[in-house]
Length: 557
Image (cartoon, rainbow, N blue to C red; front, side):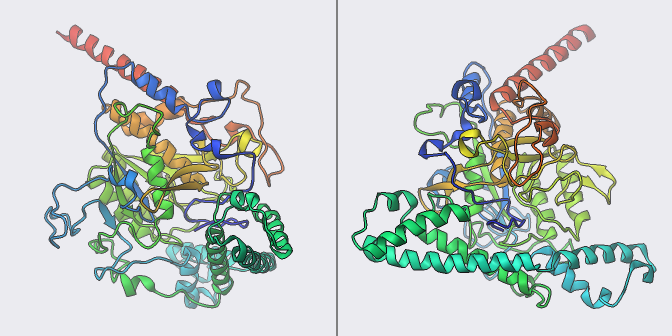
């Protein structure tokens, strides 16, 4: 779910305010702090180091579990994972895995008739209305006899509290409604003279109106966008679309307590949701109705080099497997559990999961799938979320710790979002969740440039959704060039290879937070991922292990 002013939670994406960043900020996240004075991940240096090695990269499959990936995006089209065991378009499950024509992945949000779930309710609404008739008249859990019911009652009570639409929520909604109405009026006036409905701040700044009313509309538009925190490179058409979508979502939230969400799943997917064994549903439309988020994420996983790099011979042969499991709204636990298993069973060694939510009613299914991935040596890179939560105190899902299994998965790498001073005046962002008990590393997530739906479209998004796939690319580099390393070793190497400030006690401001924080208070590694250091650590680790193995072999002979 997109975030605007009032931060919501599902797809970990957030729109950003005006900063000092300009067009030169494209791919700032690749830069090196020593060379460029920018807190990027030193990706160019990493490739320079790889050029000194004799290692040859091996193919690596990275699953992007998201809302869909545009298979017609030219840069991504070339690197899509292809299931060679399937014959495209013959309507037959050639590889007998239960999923017909899964050529580039699978869509767990689709029906066999080709329809797709686009928008879905948030989990708290689904929980609240599912158990409303059962718990509404019960004052407290002491009225219940079984421990299972008491636990469910507590979850329902929390959902009931969070579903409330406060007076502040209503005031914010009214403000955005009024602002949107005004922006539309400004835009209509501007377009009459400019004759371009896709104008941006830059084009509008250069535009010299003739009519006074147009000049006034131009100046008002330029003043209004930064107040709303809208990216200056967003086109007018996109601004209106995003505002209308935000308003629609908030209007639904206002009614959520009084109107049960439509059961679109049973209407489109038609599975028996409560039966995890009923798993062969969906279709092969991995793009779906809204692939903006997933396409942007996939481009960051691929980290496609620009024409000035000249590193094509070093670029790891990454294959992007798309698993569509995230609607516009909260994902369903069943789809996540089965999506993880699908990715693992079809050869993914890294799974990028840029999503999350505050309730997980079928958490055991997801927890078990994560442990299944661990047994198969698959690394899961997960975004921390965008609510400014301290995850040491607030639970979000998926979560490394399982209260049902009473253990912590060691194959999950949880990623918070960092920034840079030239973008927003601080190393941290004002939206990222944090907490060293859960969050492992920081990664650039503010004003990030990547692929968008369309043959050759690109643009900026921000959020921990963007931070995670940048880490997934580093993990893919390591697993491609050093395939003997396990998922847990790759996680450890990435955490050990972070950039840290010289003085670990240095604090950085977080907007909307009262106290600045050290990086140790954000993530357990206390630093920002660094591809060059990680590659060097991986090389040294592998060499030392090979020496030990060789020495052991000689001594045994």
